[in-house]
Length: 454
Image 1: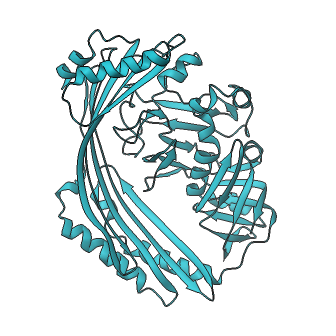
Image 2: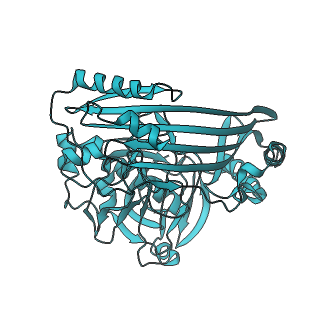
Protein backbone atom coordinates (compact mmCIF):
# COMPACT_ATOMS: atom_id res chain seq x y z
CA UNK A 1 0.00 0.00 0.00
CA UNK A 2 2.82 2.40 0.86
CA UNK A 3 4.54 2.00 -2.52
CA UNK A 4 1.19 2.33 -4.34
CA UNK A 5 0.35 5.57 -2.54
CA UNK A 6 3.75 7.20 -3.01
CA UNK A 7 3.84 6.25 -6.69
CA UNK A 8 0.47 7.96 -7.17
CA UNK A 9 1.65 11.08 -5.32
CA UNK A 10 5.07 11.36 -7.00
CA UNK A 11 5.73 14.73 -8.66
CA UNK A 12 2.06 15.64 -8.59
CA UNK A 13 1.30 19.27 -9.60
CA UNK A 14 0.28 20.53 -6.19
CA UNK A 15 1.78 22.31 -3.19
CA UNK A 16 0.50 19.46 -1.05
CA UNK A 17 -1.49 16.27 -1.60
CA UNK A 18 -2.61 13.31 0.49
CA UNK A 19 -4.39 9.98 0.07
CA UNK A 20 -6.53 8.35 2.77
CA UNK A 21 -8.09 4.94 2.24
CA UNK A 22 -10.28 3.06 4.70
CA UNK A 23 -11.73 -0.39 5.23
CA UNK A 24 -14.80 -0.35 7.49
CA UNK A 25 -16.58 -3.22 9.22
CA UNK A 26 -19.60 -2.58 11.42
CA UNK A 27 -22.64 -4.20 13.00
CA UNK A 28 -25.72 -2.86 14.76
CA UNK A 29 -28.58 -4.46 16.67
CA UNK A 30 -31.35 -2.42 18.24
CA UNK A 31 -34.73 -2.78 19.92
CA UNK A 32 -37.41 -0.12 20.02
CA UNK A 33 -40.02 -1.23 22.49
CA UNK A 34 -40.84 -4.89 21.92
CA UNK A 35 -39.71 -4.78 18.29
CA UNK A 36 -36.29 -5.72 16.99
CA UNK A 37 -35.71 -2.64 14.84
CA UNK A 38 -32.23 -3.22 13.42
CA UNK A 39 -30.08 -6.29 12.91
CA UNK A 40 -27.31 -6.15 10.39
CA UNK A 41 -23.70 -5.66 9.48
CA UNK A 42 -21.86 -3.97 6.66
CA UNK A 43 -18.39 -3.78 5.21
CA UNK A 44 -17.12 -1.19 2.80
CA UNK A 45 -14.01 0.50 1.56
CA UNK A 46 -13.50 3.99 0.20
CA UNK A 47 -10.90 6.68 -0.12
CA UNK A 48 -10.30 10.36 -0.67
CA UNK A 49 -7.53 12.40 -2.27
CA UNK A 50 -7.02 15.99 -1.16
CA UNK A 51 -4.72 18.38 -2.99
CA UNK A 52 -3.86 22.02 -2.31
CA UNK A 53 -2.71 24.44 -5.02
CA UNK A 54 -2.20 28.13 -4.20
CA UNK A 55 -4.43 27.82 -1.16
CA UNK A 56 -7.28 26.12 -3.02
CA UNK A 57 -8.36 22.57 -2.22
CA UNK A 58 -9.38 19.89 -4.68
CA UNK A 59 -10.97 16.59 -3.66
CA UNK A 60 -11.48 13.29 -5.43
CA UNK A 61 -13.42 10.50 -3.70
CA UNK A 62 -13.11 6.89 -4.81
CA UNK A 63 -14.21 3.37 -3.83
CA UNK A 64 -11.30 1.27 -5.09
CA UNK A 65 -7.59 1.69 -5.71
CA UNK A 66 -7.71 1.39 -9.49
CA UNK A 67 -6.12 4.28 -11.43
CA UNK A 68 -5.04 5.97 -8.20
CA UNK A 69 -2.59 8.26 -10.00
CA UNK A 70 -5.41 9.61 -12.14
CA UNK A 71 -7.46 10.38 -9.02
CA UNK A 72 -4.56 12.34 -7.57
CA UNK A 73 -4.25 14.34 -10.79
CA UNK A 74 -8.00 15.07 -10.79
CA UNK A 75 -7.79 16.48 -7.26
CA UNK A 76 -4.78 18.59 -8.26
CA UNK A 77 -6.59 19.94 -11.34
CA UNK A 78 -9.64 20.88 -9.28
CA UNK A 79 -7.44 22.65 -6.72
CA UNK A 80 -5.70 24.62 -9.46
CA UNK A 81 -9.05 25.95 -10.70
CA UNK A 82 -9.80 27.71 -7.42
CA UNK A 83 -6.38 28.43 -5.90
CA UNK A 84 -5.64 32.15 -5.92
CA UNK A 85 -3.36 32.75 -2.93
CA UNK A 86 -0.32 31.36 -1.18
CA UNK A 87 -0.63 27.87 0.30
CA UNK A 88 -0.04 28.13 4.04
CA UNK A 89 0.25 24.74 5.73
CA UNK A 90 2.15 24.44 8.99
CA UNK A 91 5.15 22.17 9.40
CA UNK A 92 5.54 19.57 12.13
CA UNK A 93 7.83 16.77 13.22
CA UNK A 94 6.31 13.62 11.67
CA UNK A 95 6.18 10.07 12.99
CA UNK A 96 7.72 8.08 10.09
CA UNK A 97 5.96 4.97 8.80
CA UNK A 98 3.62 4.63 11.77
CA UNK A 99 1.84 1.30 12.14
CA UNK A 100 -0.75 1.45 14.96
CA UNK A 101 -2.73 -1.76 15.48
CA UNK A 102 -5.54 -2.16 18.00
CA UNK A 103 -4.73 -3.99 21.21
CA UNK A 104 -7.79 -5.55 22.82
CA UNK A 105 -8.66 -6.54 26.35
CA UNK A 106 -11.65 -8.46 24.99
CA UNK A 107 -12.11 -8.26 21.21
CA UNK A 108 -15.78 -7.79 20.27
CA UNK A 109 -15.10 -9.45 16.91
CA UNK A 110 -14.75 -12.79 18.68
CA UNK A 111 -18.29 -12.70 20.09
CA UNK A 112 -21.12 -14.26 18.10
CA UNK A 113 -23.97 -12.15 16.75
CA UNK A 114 -26.43 -14.35 18.61
CA UNK A 115 -24.75 -13.56 21.92
CA UNK A 116 -24.81 -9.82 21.21
CA UNK A 117 -28.45 -9.94 20.20
CA UNK A 118 -29.39 -11.98 23.29
CA UNK A 119 -27.58 -9.46 25.49
CA UNK A 120 -29.55 -6.43 24.35
CA UNK A 121 -32.79 -8.41 24.24
CA UNK A 122 -32.36 -9.16 27.93
CA UNK A 123 -31.63 -5.52 28.80
CA UNK A 124 -34.63 -4.40 26.75
CA UNK A 125 -36.99 -6.83 28.45
CA UNK A 126 -35.68 -5.74 31.85
CA UNK A 127 -36.42 -2.08 31.10
CA UNK A 128 -39.88 -2.76 29.65
CA UNK A 129 -40.83 -4.88 32.64
CA UNK A 130 -39.40 -2.57 35.30
CA UNK A 131 -42.67 -0.88 36.29
CA UNK A 132 -46.07 0.10 34.95
CA UNK A 133 -44.96 3.63 33.99
CA UNK A 134 -42.56 2.40 31.31
CA UNK A 135 -44.21 2.83 27.94
CA UNK A 136 -41.29 2.06 25.64
CA UNK A 137 -37.56 1.54 25.43
CA UNK A 138 -34.57 1.82 23.11
CA UNK A 139 -31.60 -0.50 23.46
CA UNK A 140 -28.85 -0.75 20.87
CA UNK A 141 -25.50 -2.41 20.38
CA UNK A 142 -23.05 -0.98 17.81
CA UNK A 143 -19.54 -2.03 16.83
CA UNK A 144 -17.12 -0.44 14.37
CA UNK A 145 -13.66 -1.37 13.15
CA UNK A 146 -11.85 1.12 10.91
CA UNK A 147 -8.54 0.38 9.14
CA UNK A 148 -7.03 3.57 7.73
CA UNK A 149 -4.09 3.98 5.34
CA UNK A 150 -2.60 7.44 4.75
CA UNK A 151 0.22 8.99 2.75
CA UNK A 152 1.14 12.56 1.79
CA UNK A 153 3.58 14.42 -0.41
CA UNK A 154 5.50 15.27 2.77
CA UNK A 155 6.72 11.68 2.76
CA UNK A 156 4.46 10.63 5.61
CA UNK A 157 2.87 7.19 5.68
CA UNK A 158 0.80 5.59 8.40
CA UNK A 159 -1.66 2.80 9.11
CA UNK A 160 -4.00 2.87 12.10
CA UNK A 161 -6.87 0.76 13.45
CA UNK A 162 -9.77 2.46 15.24
CA UNK A 163 -12.27 0.08 16.89
CA UNK A 164 -15.30 1.00 19.00
CA UNK A 165 -18.12 -0.85 20.75
CA UNK A 166 -21.22 0.95 22.13
CA UNK A 167 -24.18 -0.03 24.29
CA UNK A 168 -26.98 2.56 24.55
CA UNK A 169 -30.11 2.13 26.66
CA UNK A 170 -33.08 4.38 27.34
CA UNK A 171 -36.45 4.09 29.08
CA UNK A 172 -39.52 6.17 28.17
CA UNK A 173 -42.13 6.61 30.88
CA UNK A 174 -45.61 8.10 30.42
CA UNK A 175 -48.39 9.04 32.85
CA UNK A 176 -51.26 11.53 32.70
CA UNK A 177 -50.03 13.01 29.43
CA UNK A 178 -46.48 13.60 30.65
CA UNK A 179 -43.49 11.81 29.09
CA UNK A 180 -40.03 11.44 30.64
CA UNK A 181 -36.94 9.72 29.31
CA UNK A 182 -33.82 8.42 31.00
CA UNK A 183 -30.76 7.11 29.17
CA UNK A 184 -27.24 5.76 29.64
CA UNK A 185 -24.52 4.64 27.24
CA UNK A 186 -21.24 2.79 27.58
CA UNK A 187 -18.41 2.55 25.08
CA UNK A 188 -14.88 1.28 24.70
CA UNK A 189 -12.25 1.02 22.00
CA UNK A 190 -10.66 -2.16 23.32
CA UNK A 191 -12.98 -4.07 25.66
CA UNK A 192 -16.24 -5.89 24.91
CA UNK A 193 -16.68 -6.30 28.68
CA UNK A 194 -17.89 -2.68 28.78
CA UNK A 195 -21.33 -3.80 27.55
CA UNK A 196 -21.68 -6.76 29.93
CA UNK A 197 -23.32 -6.89 33.37
CA UNK A 198 -25.27 -3.65 32.93
CA UNK A 199 -28.44 -4.90 34.60
CA UNK A 200 -28.06 -2.43 37.48
CA UNK A 201 -27.78 0.46 35.03
CA UNK A 202 -30.88 -0.73 33.15
CA UNK A 203 -32.85 -0.94 36.40
CA UNK A 204 -31.65 2.50 37.53
CA UNK A 205 -32.55 4.31 34.32
CA UNK A 206 -35.99 2.68 34.20
CA UNK A 207 -36.67 3.72 37.78
CA UNK A 208 -35.41 7.24 37.13
CA UNK A 209 -37.70 7.66 34.10
CA UNK A 210 -40.63 6.70 36.30
CA UNK A 211 -39.51 8.92 39.18
CA UNK A 212 -39.15 11.92 36.85
CA UNK A 213 -42.90 11.73 36.15
CA UNK A 214 -43.52 12.62 39.80
CA UNK A 215 -40.60 15.01 40.25
CA UNK A 216 -41.34 18.75 40.59
CA UNK A 217 -39.99 21.34 38.22
CA UNK A 218 -37.26 23.64 39.43
CA UNK A 219 -38.42 27.21 39.82
CA UNK A 220 -36.85 29.57 37.30
CA UNK A 221 -34.27 32.05 38.53
CA UNK A 222 -30.67 32.40 39.67
CA UNK A 223 -29.27 29.45 41.59
CA UNK A 224 -26.02 28.04 42.88
CA UNK A 225 -25.45 24.90 40.82
CA UNK A 226 -23.17 21.92 41.29
CA UNK A 227 -22.38 20.14 38.02
CA UNK A 228 -21.76 16.41 38.13
CA UNK A 229 -18.55 15.49 36.20
CA UNK A 230 -20.51 14.26 33.16
CA UNK A 231 -22.46 17.54 32.93
CA UNK A 232 -19.28 19.56 33.55
CA UNK A 233 -17.52 17.68 30.75
CA UNK A 234 -20.25 18.13 28.17
CA UNK A 235 -20.60 21.77 29.18
CA UNK A 236 -16.91 22.54 28.63
CA UNK A 237 -16.94 20.58 25.35
CA UNK A 238 -20.02 22.22 23.89
CA UNK A 239 -19.96 25.75 25.31
CA UNK A 240 -16.20 26.35 25.24
CA UNK A 241 -14.40 23.61 23.32
CA UNK A 242 -16.04 24.33 19.97
CA UNK A 243 -15.00 27.98 20.30
CA UNK A 244 -11.39 26.75 20.52
CA UNK A 245 -11.52 25.00 17.13
CA UNK A 246 -9.46 27.23 14.87
CA UNK A 247 -11.40 26.62 11.65
CA UNK A 248 -14.18 28.50 13.44
CA UNK A 249 -11.77 31.30 14.31
CA UNK A 250 -9.33 32.03 11.50
CA UNK A 251 -11.84 33.79 9.22
CA UNK A 252 -13.91 35.33 12.04
CA UNK A 253 -12.26 38.48 13.38
CA UNK A 254 -14.79 39.15 16.20
CA UNK A 255 -14.30 35.61 17.53
CA UNK A 256 -10.52 35.89 17.17
CA UNK A 257 -10.64 38.87 19.53
CA UNK A 258 -12.96 37.04 21.90
CA UNK A 259 -10.66 33.99 21.88
CA UNK A 260 -7.34 35.86 21.95
CA UNK A 261 -4.53 33.97 23.67
CA UNK A 262 -3.87 35.42 27.12
CA UNK A 263 -7.39 36.74 27.64
CA UNK A 264 -8.90 36.04 31.06
CA UNK A 265 -11.89 33.76 30.57
CA UNK A 266 -12.45 32.13 33.96
CA UNK A 267 -11.38 31.90 37.57
CA UNK A 268 -7.69 31.46 38.28
CA UNK A 269 -8.19 27.87 39.42
CA UNK A 270 -9.65 26.81 36.05
CA UNK A 271 -7.53 24.67 33.72
CA UNK A 272 -8.86 22.95 30.58
CA UNK A 273 -7.03 20.67 28.14
CA UNK A 274 -7.68 18.66 25.00
CA UNK A 275 -5.52 15.53 25.00
CA UNK A 276 -5.51 13.15 22.05
CA UNK A 277 -2.82 10.94 23.58
CA UNK A 278 -4.72 9.53 26.59
CA UNK A 279 -4.56 5.71 26.71
CA UNK A 280 -7.86 3.91 26.22
CA UNK A 281 -9.95 6.99 25.46
CA UNK A 282 -12.26 7.10 22.43
CA UNK A 283 -10.85 10.39 21.17
CA UNK A 284 -7.25 9.15 21.27
CA UNK A 285 -5.11 8.07 18.34
CA UNK A 286 -1.39 8.43 17.53
CA UNK A 287 -1.89 10.79 14.59
CA UNK A 288 -4.80 12.76 13.20
CA UNK A 289 -6.17 12.43 9.67
CA UNK A 290 -3.48 14.70 8.22
CA UNK A 291 -0.72 12.61 9.79
CA UNK A 292 0.02 15.14 12.55
CA UNK A 293 0.95 13.53 15.89
CA UNK A 294 -1.70 14.13 18.53
CA UNK A 295 -0.78 15.97 21.71
CA UNK A 296 -2.09 17.52 24.90
CA UNK A 297 -3.13 21.10 24.18
CA UNK A 298 -3.76 23.52 27.03
CA UNK A 299 -6.87 25.53 26.21
CA UNK A 300 -7.24 27.39 29.53
CA UNK A 301 -4.34 27.78 31.95
CA UNK A 302 -4.99 29.42 35.33
CA UNK A 303 -8.13 31.08 33.98
CA UNK A 304 -6.50 32.48 30.82
CA UNK A 305 -6.81 31.33 27.21
CA UNK A 306 -3.71 29.31 26.46
CA UNK A 307 -4.26 27.65 23.09
CA UNK A 308 -6.44 26.70 20.16
CA UNK A 309 -7.02 23.44 18.28
CA UNK A 310 -5.56 23.33 14.77
CA UNK A 311 -5.31 21.59 11.43
CA UNK A 312 -2.34 22.15 9.13
CA UNK A 313 -4.16 24.97 7.35
CA UNK A 314 -5.46 26.84 10.39
CA UNK A 315 -2.09 26.56 12.08
CA UNK A 316 -0.37 27.87 8.95
CA UNK A 317 -2.73 30.80 8.56
CA UNK A 318 -2.68 31.70 12.26
CA UNK A 319 1.10 31.17 12.62
CA UNK A 320 0.59 28.47 15.22
CA UNK A 321 1.72 24.91 15.79
CA UNK A 322 -0.54 22.15 14.43
CA UNK A 323 -2.12 20.30 17.34
CA UNK A 324 -3.22 17.02 15.76
CA UNK A 325 -6.92 17.91 15.71
CA UNK A 326 -7.76 17.43 12.01
CA UNK A 327 -10.25 14.57 12.16
CA UNK A 328 -12.76 12.85 9.90
CA UNK A 329 -15.57 10.38 10.59
CA UNK A 330 -14.71 8.34 7.50
CA UNK A 331 -13.07 8.09 4.11
CA UNK A 332 -15.69 10.13 2.27
CA UNK A 333 -15.13 13.18 4.45
CA UNK A 334 -12.34 15.74 4.57
CA UNK A 335 -10.76 16.26 7.99
CA UNK A 336 -11.89 19.32 9.91
CA UNK A 337 -10.77 20.68 13.26
CA UNK A 338 -12.30 18.56 16.03
CA UNK A 339 -11.75 17.91 19.72
CA UNK A 340 -10.37 14.62 21.06
CA UNK A 341 -10.58 14.14 24.86
CA UNK A 342 -11.50 17.48 26.43
CA UNK A 343 -11.70 17.95 30.17
CA UNK A 344 -11.44 20.30 33.12
CA UNK A 345 -8.46 19.53 35.33
CA UNK A 346 -9.21 18.71 38.98
CA UNK A 347 -9.04 21.29 41.76
CA UNK A 348 -8.48 20.91 45.48
CA UNK A 349 -11.95 20.52 47.02
CA UNK A 350 -13.60 17.23 47.86
CA UNK A 351 -17.14 16.56 46.68
CA UNK A 352 -18.30 16.88 50.30
CA UNK A 353 -16.66 20.29 50.64
CA UNK A 354 -18.32 21.51 47.44
CA UNK A 355 -21.77 20.48 48.62
CA UNK A 356 -21.18 21.79 52.15
CA UNK A 357 -21.00 25.30 50.72
CA UNK A 358 -24.55 25.14 49.31
CA UNK A 359 -27.55 25.81 51.57
CA UNK A 360 -30.06 25.82 48.72
CA UNK A 361 -29.04 24.90 45.19
CA UNK A 362 -29.28 22.53 42.24
CA UNK A 363 -27.25 19.40 41.45
CA UNK A 364 -27.28 18.98 37.64
CA UNK A 365 -26.55 15.51 36.28
CA UNK A 366 -26.02 14.31 32.75
CA UNK A 367 -26.97 16.34 29.70
CA UNK A 368 -30.12 15.75 27.69
CA UNK A 369 -29.57 18.30 24.94
CA UNK A 370 -29.02 21.94 24.18
CA UNK A 371 -27.64 24.51 21.80
CA UNK A 372 -24.92 27.13 21.57
CA UNK A 373 -24.63 30.36 19.62
CA UNK A 374 -21.20 32.01 19.78
CA UNK A 375 -20.53 32.38 23.53
CA UNK A 376 -24.18 31.87 24.57
CA UNK A 377 -25.52 28.47 25.57
CA UNK A 378 -28.67 26.64 26.71
CA UNK A 379 -28.39 23.09 28.10
CA UNK A 380 -30.94 20.73 29.64
CA UNK A 381 -29.84 18.44 32.46
CA UNK A 382 -30.83 14.80 32.05
CA UNK A 383 -32.04 15.03 35.64
CA UNK A 384 -31.23 17.07 38.73
CA UNK A 385 -31.65 17.20 42.49
CA UNK A 386 -32.29 19.92 45.01
CA UNK A 387 -29.40 20.60 47.36
CA UNK A 388 -30.52 21.47 50.90
CA UNK A 389 -28.04 22.33 53.63
CA UNK A 390 -25.22 20.67 51.76
CA UNK A 391 -27.11 17.42 51.12
CA UNK A 392 -28.69 15.93 47.99
CA UNK A 393 -32.48 16.11 48.39
CA UNK A 394 -35.47 15.55 46.06
CA UNK A 395 -35.30 14.76 42.34
CA UNK A 396 -36.07 17.63 39.93
CA UNK A 397 -37.08 17.59 36.28
CA UNK A 398 -36.87 19.90 33.28
CA UNK A 399 -33.83 21.82 34.54
CA UNK A 400 -32.44 24.11 31.84
CA UNK A 401 -29.18 26.04 32.33
CA UNK A 402 -28.53 29.15 30.19
CA UNK A 403 -25.98 31.90 30.00
CA UNK A 404 -22.73 33.30 28.63
CA UNK A 405 -19.92 30.76 28.80
CA UNK A 406 -17.30 33.28 29.95
CA UNK A 407 -19.51 34.77 32.65
CA UNK A 408 -20.26 31.24 33.81
CA UNK A 409 -16.57 30.25 33.92
CA UNK A 410 -15.87 33.37 35.97
CA UNK A 411 -18.66 32.42 38.37
CA UNK A 412 -17.06 29.11 39.31
CA UNK A 413 -16.37 29.16 43.05
CA UNK A 414 -15.34 25.55 43.64
CA UNK A 415 -13.54 22.87 41.61
CA UNK A 416 -13.54 19.31 42.89
CA UNK A 417 -10.60 16.94 43.10
CA UNK A 418 -12.56 14.02 41.65
CA UNK A 419 -11.74 14.08 37.93
CA UNK A 420 -13.87 11.66 35.91
CA UNK A 421 -13.52 11.06 32.16
CA UNK A 422 -15.87 8.40 30.84
CA UNK A 423 -16.07 6.72 27.45
CA UNK A 424 -19.66 6.91 26.27
CA UNK A 425 -21.54 6.28 23.06
CA UNK A 426 -22.95 8.93 20.81
CA UNK A 427 -20.16 11.25 19.76
CA UNK A 428 -19.66 14.79 18.54
CA UNK A 429 -21.29 16.37 15.50
CA UNK A 430 -19.94 19.21 13.37
CA UNK A 431 -19.98 20.21 9.73
CA UNK A 432 -22.22 17.30 8.73
CA UNK A 433 -19.83 14.77 10.26
CA UNK A 434 -21.36 12.73 13.09
CA UNK A 435 -20.79 10.81 15.26
CA UNK A 436 -17.09 11.40 15.89
CA UNK A 437 -15.71 9.49 18.90
CA UNK A 438 -14.68 11.91 21.66
CA UNK A 439 -14.61 11.96 25.42
CA UNK A 440 -15.15 14.78 27.88
CA UNK A 441 -15.09 15.11 31.61
CA UNK A 442 -13.99 16.98 34.66
CA UNK A 443 -14.49 17.06 38.39
CA UNK A 444 -17.56 18.33 40.24
CA UNK A 445 -17.95 22.09 39.71
CA UNK A 446 -19.79 24.59 41.91
CA UNK A 447 -21.00 27.68 40.07
CA UNK A 448 -22.86 30.62 41.62
CA UNK A 449 -25.56 32.82 40.09
CA UNK A 450 -26.53 30.42 37.27
CA UNK A 451 -29.71 31.18 35.33
CA UNK A 452 -32.02 28.16 35.51
CA UNK A 453 -35.30 27.83 33.65
CA UNK A 454 -37.88 25.16 34.41
